[in-house]
Length: 223
Image (cartoon, rainbow, N blue to C red; front, side):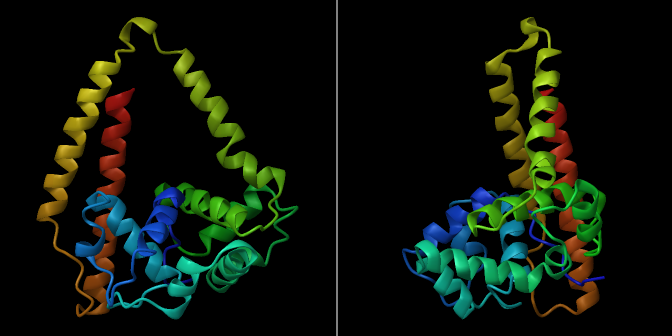
């Protein structure tokens, strides 16, 4: 079992952050760097992802790979991203990703020890990152996050009575939810790399539980 949870931030957020860094890579990446662009939960997931992929160290210092990834283009960028993924996702690359099944893919991800509620997000990040790196994925792996989820979403949407689909109510609910999220995260202690490993682990578990609870609340409010 591996000691780091795989990245589970939305890949679009990860890509957006890399584009933002083209304006200049700071000496240290911390909350003050991303707070104006991302919510607290997205920012913390982003930090966790950067550390897992060794793009920053425990103190937030950018690695050479991060700088190269930010400025690389075309084939050079794809090759570098592929190398970064291969260095972290060792159990995943032991599979023949062009032929692997859904269950093989999930079993490989379980080796990281991530909780079930986070695994789907971890897989989604990898799938989009792998495509970005030009890595061939089987139709079974891709269908896990696209085909099934899409048909499920369409089914759920069709089951909702039209008379309760009020965009104004949904918008108001989302805004209230975001306010609640920000207030909770403002009170949550900022990660301190000087904490001992046990405290760091408890902090990370707490952040994951907090994010999962907030996500559940948001999902239930939009149903």
